[in-house]
Length: 195
Image (tube, rainbow, N blue to C red; front, top):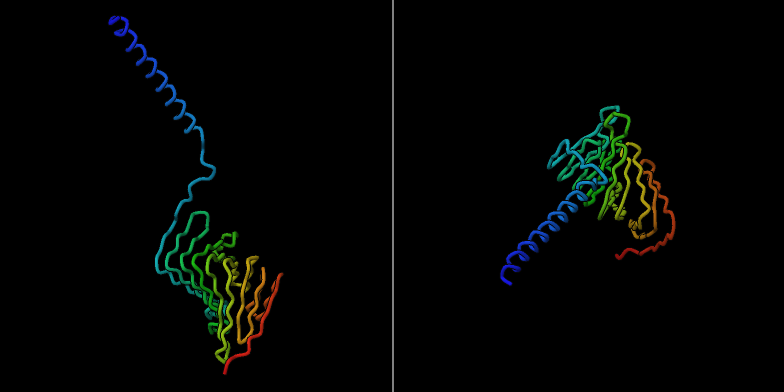
């Protein structure tokens, strides 16, 4: 009996080792055959405390873009942390836009001109008129075209200004002529200011 166990035990260990190695080889070859669905994005530049000033054709400030952190990728897309945009009119700041994060897409024509800025999370757009009255828009997503001074979203949006509060789903705004078009489910309330 001892002789039989002396032969059987090593045989069982050998068979178990064979199957274990075979299984390990199958797992590793199947893992190698699975290619990632998207390639890893290559970072081209990284910066903290970024403050960019862009000028119009007459040399006046067109808009500024600040960000606590900025990552620029080789595919011409830039990710922003805590972006702050100021749009100017006739050399004076008119509209301010803040958000938790953002993404810049280049124009695509090789000019490196910013065509769109997508802002995400806690987006607020505000301005003070000549009399100190504040107008504010709030949403969770906003597409900004700084050259055209247009804003667009399909997300819920709220607007408040001197006694007027509105909400809607979706919005288009042209900040040059200060027109705002709410798309659907528009609701408004006029609140009489307290004296």
